[in-house]
Image (cartoon, rainbow, N blue to C red):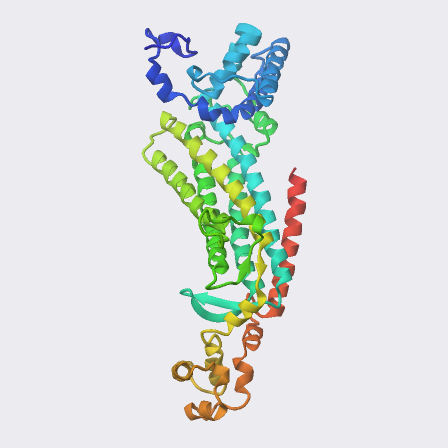
Amino acid sequence: MASSVKKPWGGRFQEETDRLVEEFTESVSFDQRLALYDIKQDLAHLEALKRAGVINKEEAESIAQGLTAIETEIREGRFVFRPELEDVHMNIEAALREKIGPLAGKLHTGRSRNDQVATDFRLYLMEEIREVLRLLHHLRRALVDKAGEGLQIILPGFTHLQHAQPVLWAHHLLAYYEMFRRDAARFQGTLERTAECPLGSAALAGTPYPLDRELTARLLGFARPSRNSMDAVSDRDFVLEFLFDAALTMMHLSRLAEEVVLWMSPEFGFVDLPDALCTGSSIMPQKKNPDLAELLRGKCGRVYGNLLTLLTVMKGLPLTYNRDLQEDKEPAFDTADTLKVSLRVAIRMVQGLSPRVERMRAAAEEGHPTATDLADYLVMKGLPFRQAHELTGRLVAFAEERGLKLWEIPLEDLRRFSDLIEEDVYAWLSVEGSVARRRTYGGTAPERVREAVIQAQRELQEELEELERSL
């Protein structure tokens, strides 16, 4: 079955498009999300055409009025997108023709859907990245606020998910602050590289019309026009960067979520979340499940998949535009939606975390967490570290056999292992002492963590001021 809709490109074709071809190739079902960006760049291109003398003032005013009317319909949800018109660009052009007649055909002078869609897509992602940066700011603020409340809370630090050394709860939270700080820096870099305007590249070779590309870039809020027309219409690095940045951020969210899941289990019992942020079981009435955290873990996978999808699409494409590039939008749209809601959920989750201080403190004493401190003590007494490590290992085994903690071993028993050990060893074996001694820059000592909180607060304030200036 063939379509009866006349295509703007149909001049050299003798047959109408098969309905199956239309259904398979249309993109307006998803790229209509770009409609307002398309109107925005239509108006910028219109201004460039007017200044170049391609369109006179009266024609420009008529086209602008038609575009503004269409924009209003889109914003109010009254615009009807027609799949047989292929994409968002052809839908808007057809609607403009219905409003102002054949004059609408002048608007496409000096451009192609190739540079048109690349421009729309960059405008869309620039806005999405700015929103992601805002959410990352609020997530880091939530982590710093929570850390500031927990500067005296001690819990066990882990390696291999085994008790390793005691650390401050605040220090643990600030580790995630650092992850999301790096994420924000990556998105900021991607934003800067995305702010390059392809409009005026036309199909691939540029245009013979004297269009001021600096003007259109400026009108659209780009930092500069693209330098190479072939690269401009075929490049999707900016999308891949966004997808990679999002995948890395989702990985960090998933790690945080995994810890929340573990910490809420009875085996850990380190934190609680408000009932409003948890769900129950349809069969087990006692359950309080951290489903928000579990879904954060799960959604990480779909974002990974979106990145791999576009990497696979791009890997074999010759210059310049190929229809395969139509497959770039759905992964990006889905990733943007998934990342934003995940960040909002993570913010609420962090804000709702309640540390169970006594349970954390008790757990911090389990598993001989100050064994390294005992080895360090022996080093301070002059024993080489490897010998101190071996001797401490034997003392741990001794304590395990007797069901004792290291600081519960009587001094006379400690001295049977080494006469270097004296009464002052017990100050080295306390959990608080262990934490307090980690005073190196970036360590978990309370004064260092307090400094880190203050530094993070200062960074966030400077960032907030910069965000406000950019609006």
